[in-house]
Length: 506
Picture (cartoon, one colour):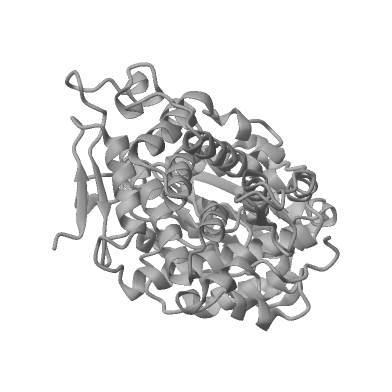
């Protein structure tokens, strides 16, 4: 059986997606591979550590949205009621989703995709992140899914948003990438709760017609809560749209071919009656976009991973670099154009907030160098960037600020640009008073990248999980056990997934 489902551009692709979602969750396709299930479980586990630690560390948006959610309690007679992380209290699903999604996204440290599948000819290159699992879990808890079907709902959500990212670049039109995740959220939530094709089409139509965030939320010299909460707020809107559609609200139809919606408005189809793209979706086996998504091994914007890898390479090969900061004359990073725009903005040379610092290449590299100089060691574990590396003291650390002044950027030109988004083409050069000029290899697939073949991923993810989870729970091993081997969990275990204590969080 063909492992792909193609939705031609001259069809109503929203209805095609709706039927696909219904069929996928109803097990009408052969099973996904163990690799696909395993990868989505890894991303989900990673997101849990991010969310738990963000809440425990008192970050603003996740805790504010959590308090808001607790003022929207579900009635005992209501079908729709789900818990927050670390709670048994049932709240309205859209409120649980916005709070939980905000928590997992707050550190900007969970998974990333680049919208790139050259085998299918789909290379639009839109970003995306694994921020939407709370939607799948909420739907599963309401629908009474066991662990296997809950993982399938997560896999489905990643597949829809991942394939949309490959065929339509929202950022080209200053629209935020979370729109793809919102569409997937409306479909998965609606399908899990028994929605029809008509109802799911309305849910997507409502989401796209009424809730389009522009990239203004992540633009400016110093970024705010809006950057971290973008996926959460869009997932809240998607869940609301799905609930309204299931209750009978009729939204705009055929939204991908609607001349006034963002898709045809920004990219005029070649022929009347078409959408701007063809969609190809995985149905079984290994044909899922999650297998091409990337992990962040710490708190940093993923575009900086190549420079981090290059720095680790040089520090490990030349430990003498760590003898005396005064001998470091210059650090020069050569990189591709999108990275220059995102993390090389001159305004980010003086970050005043964590949200700006984790999108500042100079801050990220300077902080890693500072830690290496202080500890006299290097390595992904040893130097992993954690929340403490972005607190007020770290932001103003005098050594970090001195090192920032020694870091320059250089555009690698067409040669580098052509290698992205297949990889993260970066090289790093250090000018040293004694050692001379040292240059890393060209880094394409750093640790955490889907095509990295070092074999270190599992152990590095386990280390990251334990470091982050320890900020919020006393028994890290128990938390890890709670969210692993999901395929073997019962529906009751899925309903109680969030029944654990987060330190200092009520």
